[in-house]
Length: 132
Length: 374
Image 1: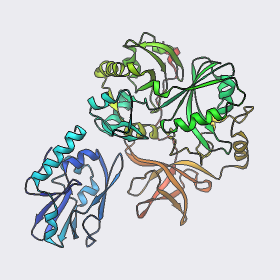
Image 2 (image 1 turned 180 degrees about the vertical axis):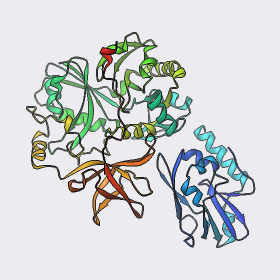
Image 3 (image 1 turned 135 degrees about the horizontal axis):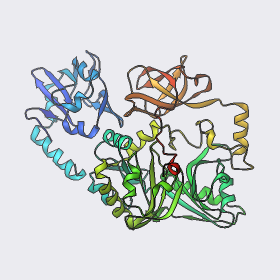
Image 4 (image 1 turned 90 degrees about the horizontal axis):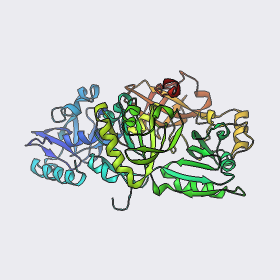
């Protein structure tokens, strides 16, 4: 399981990469793996504002539609149209292929997220439960 | 998952890396390697399914045949011994109790195979309709395991293990006491995927050994264990109905497009009056196929719109792994049911354009020429 150091993570298997006031958001390899082949991605519009834990996007695999929850509060400043056009990019490299970038409303939100070590522990715990 | 019921193959699900979920109270794998890979294996090679959660009811006695004829919409009188019939059973109001397979071994010895989520309801319904028929019903669901081997390579694989020439078992025919890898099995050329294949009924204690032997025998043919996810996409592409989606007590078989399995000229069966009337008066709604034209994947339960009003609901929808398109089945008002009619599917907050197409999404690859091919 690939986990990248220096990113923030959520228990819903999103990653957050902070660049100053801005944060890129995507899904982890664990999430991608769980979802299976991704065939459709619906992203918000630029300037949409979301509170932490609000639904901001939908990822559909062959199996089902899954809502993505906002890791932290913020305003959308960029959306990655590439993953809308080619949803399978999320399967191919979920860390490279971000979904949206936001303007962070409150930097202290980041304290509620996990670091890579904590996230790795979570994945290991889940894997031992479900046997991968 | 302590409270979930486990099939006798539970250990095999774990061993083969199944992602185990709660399905109608049963602990079963939704997928093993992945839905798409499993789906393709069944279409191109072979897949093995644990369907032990399905229910089986034995019907025995001098009037077993008459009892079944009254219960079901299809006509069992066409059956020779060891032939299998797909049918529905209805309530007097025409809604569907369940869809089922009828295995006729003899006039006084019949096996009914029913859906897992309906076992108790169906068994009560059957008992309620015994009336004066000289018949004995036994729910043997807990004593019977079932595995389904489906796909173009199914026969080659099973033949390595079976003591019977499988080409003797024709489409929707069955044979009892077939020795499969040392276990005594009931084998039928039936399935729920649109491919050639077999359903194998056996004692719980034999299930794991036979499963492992079939997996081993199928290795060189590319066999994969298949979970419930691909089971649903496979049956959907072949437009085979699922109870709870295309069928329910609020949907009649005629509305579901299953009129072929309703023989209205049969002397009597439960629900006949209402269905005859519905046929005479014409349907007010029916299930159609549709293809998305805009972006979005239709899902079970989504609303269908046209002319600014709701005209129906999606019964099943998917990104089809074989066709690589977003398609679905929907129950719509009859005036919107002709081919090429523009409709809209409400995907979350947006209405997305779609159009009515034939339900024959995928051409079934049944093997109906077994006897002549021998």
